[in-house]
Image 1 (tube, one colour):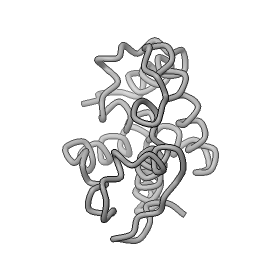
Image 2 (cartoon, rainbow, N blue to C red; image 1 turned 135 degrees about the vertical axis):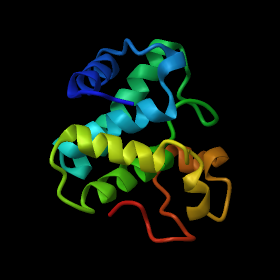
Image 3 (cartoon, rainbow, N blue to C red; image 1 turned 60 degrees about the horizontal axis):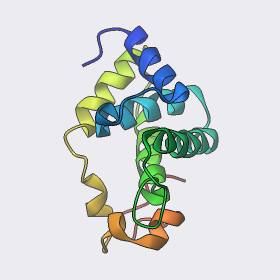
Image 4 (cartoon, one colour; image 1 turned 90 degrees about the vertical axis):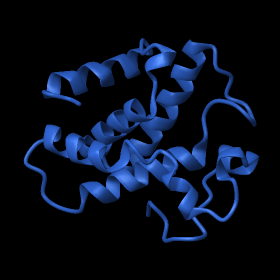
Length: 142
């Protein structure tokens, strides 16, 4: 768990510099970077920064961004939207408080998206390429 904001900034910088080792690019790391961008940018910008950064990071890891590998548009927008919605649930006193609360809520539930979709969104080629809104619960983004 993060003990100070420097750890958050270090992770975001490593994401931006594409120096996060593939083994450390975990669900939690995705969340922290998304949390940072949602807290510092409007949603429409945050989702685009996440998209571009994940593409570039995948390239640096040698992970192809194809129809069955790499970047997934729907899942990235789903999680970024969920994070943006969580940010609006209250006034956070600090970035660290927000990150800790959101990690407590979302880290252990990496398959949460499955309850929002009636199909296997993770394996769906169209969902990997373009945003598909959830069809079982209200969308996690505007």
